[in-house]
Structures are given as structure tokens and as C-alpha cells.
Image (cartoon, rainbow, N blue to C red; front, side):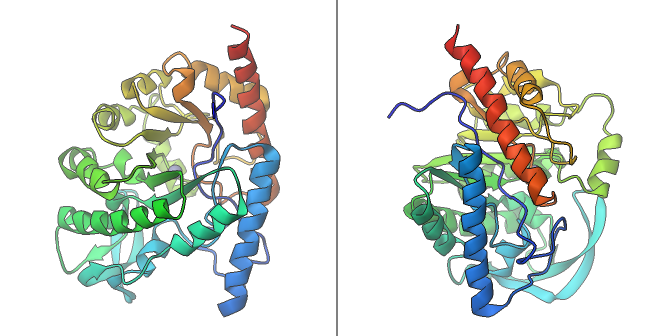
Length: 344
Ligand SMILES: [Zn+2]
């Protein structure tokens, strides 16, 4: 089957229905419990699938409807981390948070999202993508009282993630994406062990593998941080050359409304590039023409077969209607550019 150029996809998360969790909020508590919660999560997955399919998104996800948070929920399923004990650390060098404590050897007693992946696979004929947190970003959300080495803990997480990823692949997932926003902050660690642990997490996978690196959700701590980054955001310049040499197939990055110089995409030659053409930090819905303008700029540095129109980051903090509008804008913008490709 020949696939069309510029297949659209999303970074991962979408807003949850108000009956499942309080909207427009990170770490929003569930409104249901036990068996009803399990059923509610699946119904929510069906709804976000329909939104994506109706908008015309080509590679769909479960919108992370079964998780409270993209990192924390995965870690909650692991042994060796005490969520009752809390210590204050600085996350991504940006803001303080009370975080759980690693108190012993970390392990995955049972699969975390594999059942969710089977469900998603059964509910759609489209290509499906599943997201997992990356090892470095996981390390950066915990106080480590056991290994006392960020690198050592990252290697343990990488092995656990690889076990999970292999089972997701066996469940029929087409693309497994690791979310590594921490790659935009800790450049020396990225160089010394970040890429290696990411590759360990993706080792042996036959499906496509991706890494998402962004400037975060549109929350205040991130907006304040962005203001300190100057006229040009060149953080990707540190990591892209390393990723280009890595075994990871796809790189998902923030683009639209950001100060990322678009030519940095050129550092990823040979990789699939998931170009963020939707801003998740504003309620304003992009016009298809605005989306197309970002994609056209990207096409100066990436070939059409490697360009995947995408969102800048997860859309979980947005209102549902806003996210639905943005999905449609993304698809329509991609269609505009696709028709131009066909005409040349
Ligand atoms: Zn992101």
C-alpha cells in the first residue's frame, strides 16, 4: 500500500471528557472509580479516536485518556518508588515540585499500557502510535534515594521501557514514541547517556520509533522559562546531530509560534520529522493557511516523505472544542500543502 505524503499525527495527549476528569488541568483527578473508571477510560478512548478520525488524522493515538500524567502514571505502576514519601526537587531546572522517592530496586511487576494498546488496535484500522515517557524525563521527576545516580536510574528505566515497548509492538502498535522534554535542558547528560538510554529503551523494535522533544505544555513555569531563552531557541542544535546518528526513526519537535529557527530541522537529515504546526499554549485555533505556512517552511529542510504534520506538544490542558478545532486545522493545512506537492 502506497501511503500518501505528509501523514498527519498528534504528539500524544488530548483533553479528557468532563465526566472522566476535570478539564483543562494537569494531574486532574478521576471523577469515576474502579470498574466504572475502567469503562469510562475506554469510552473516552473511543471518543478521541472518533475526533481524530473525523478530523482526518492519519496516525491516531489513544489521546492518553487512561493516564493522569504522561510520566507519573507509568511510574505508579513500577515497584521501588514510594509515592507516599515526598521530597522537593527542581524539575527540568525550572520549578520545584514534591516528588515520589526511589527507595529500592525499580521493576515493572506487570505490563502498564499493553491492554490499552490491544483495545486501541481493536477499535481502529488506522495506524496507531503509543507514547511512553523517556528514561531521562522519568529520572527528572523523582527523588532517588537508592541508586543515587541519574545515569544508573535511567539505564534501569530504559530496560523497563524496552520490555513494555516490545509488548506494545506485539499488540500491533505501529509507532512507539518516547517523550523526552528533558532533552531540551540537560545537554551534557543527553550527550553522555541520554541518547544511549533512549536507544536502549527502543532496542530490538521492528516498529517505528520516535522521540518527542518540546518546550512543554503552556503552563506558567514553561511560559516564564521560554521568556528567558532569547530571540532564537537553539536548544535543538545540541541534540539533533546526536539523534541523527541514533537508531531512533522519528523526531517530534515544537515549531509553530515558537522561536525555534526552522533550519535546525536540517540537522535531522534522513529522519522522519514530526513538525509541530499547532500551538498547544493558546486557545486560538490556527487557520489551515497558518498550518500550511509552517509546513512549507519545514519543506525547505525536510523531504515530503519524511515530513509528518503534528502538534507542538500534548493537547491535554486545552478545552475539548479547542483541541477538536486544532485537529481539523492540522489536517486541512496538511491538505493544502499536499495539493501543492501534487501540482509540481
Ligand atoms: Zn511536549
